[in-house]
Image (cartoon, rainbow, N blue to C red; front, top):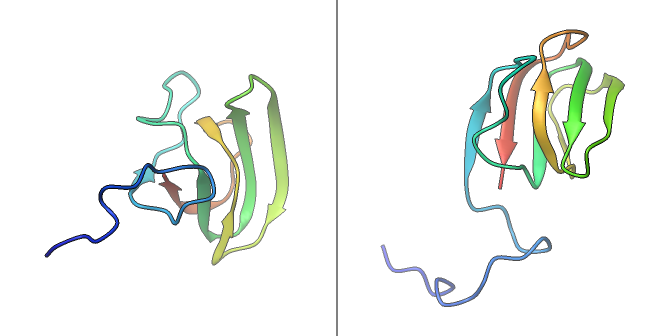
Length: 87
């Protein structure tokens, strides 16, 4: 299928173009830094942000898309599930 927008560069404000399942892990980075994180089943999400900060995002709502640049989702303190990294 032709993509009329293929010639344009992807930026942080562009629509999301790819995604991958996120398995929380305390020692392994995601395959790519996200532009957004989808939370399927709500709960807490422990992350390392692209800028280096580590924090726990409390009570993230299920079925929600969060515009957050994450390089790792930690297993410790993460209770949310069905996470998807979007780029």
